[in-house]
Image (cartoon, chains in turn red, blue):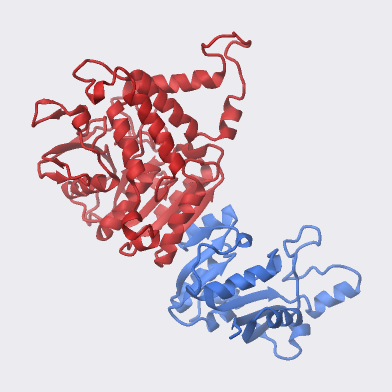
Length: 375
Length: 200
């Protein structure tokens, strides 16, 4: 079960915050909880903290296992651990489930203390800026004034960027992987189809399905199936599934025939069993709303004027959901501000999902960058 | 300043001597980033390298040098006009496909350009051509069929090129290993260095 460089058994912790949180939408949360995990040791100078921000369907469980359960490996086990690219012998790594999540942090499936009922549809829409605010409070709770690095892929990379904009004194390096400074119309379109699949599921009950004892499984499953297609590349799908038939012959019906159908349905089912539909809606909205250039007349370079961090920006050649072009736009804005930045475009066939995959060159780049971070 | 790499890379020392302390430098085709390291240590410069090759990009990461992975041939769109003090093309000019475009881009993004290249007019090269073969030498180590050096030139060629393309040459150094060459440089020089700016 445990590969070399494994962290062993990990236990999540919960931090409770009772200072009201004013959200970008204008809504206020009186109190909330964040579930988080840590790996490695915080050094005496408290200078070796690394925050890992998760993407749409991720959570706080980055690495290691729970209770000897071999299926409970963290989502970034291949990247984080002792001797790995993000080395827990050097760094104190923190993973947190974002506000609005469904893995232990306060979210739509939590009880609203004001009403004594589930938040459900009443849970406020949260943004990347809001998440960063809550992560800063977690840093305070952990006694970390300044992270050595904040890192993330996709939506996680957006949070890493936002940290350097809102709290330039509290982060020295940002690792922005397979991310974008804003979504394209096409990207928002995919997100909206996913949301519509959930919202129009008869079991959704306007978001209050918890009190009806229902789960909008069909909608969530469809949303995930659609998302999954966009996270893979055409080439990767062709290589993995091609036109392979499940039973070797056409059945002239609408049950599963092609292997790709089987795969997508399996992924959809698995996801619908473990993820909350309201959280999915919130996460996609946070993606859609992210646009730091907006308040600077759409000038991304102007948005980074206050930034001080050093940046690593990585993209993957076959990622068409967050294409290299989107990363190059970030790099351009950083260059315009004379910030330290390195950028690599990694050749990979796995599309957007590449950032989660074990790739020797990718992991070497991250390791080299992390090794040069002084603590 | 003398460092161990200073001794092994006299070509870096020539470039460093031209670069003002604290300058902002862009190194095109920066390889493993060793020139940028050298300039950082010798002249306290800051800046970026541009490199296409994966292995070199990783080496830059290991050397702690800012590197942007990109293809020089597709231009320098990531860099604003007049945003650097120097843009360097160190022993890469001869391997660039679109020479006119790269020189034009260098003059756009930087107040001064620095170029170094192996002098095809070096007497040993000429001798080999006279003997009926493409030259293979210390500075041109490749066989004709697998060389990346597709645009070899002599000092005379480059100076004419600059004149025709609006680049005013500010300074020239010619080297034979670590010796400066002033007498018959187009014949006796192995490596040529030029510092130039946009013709005003």
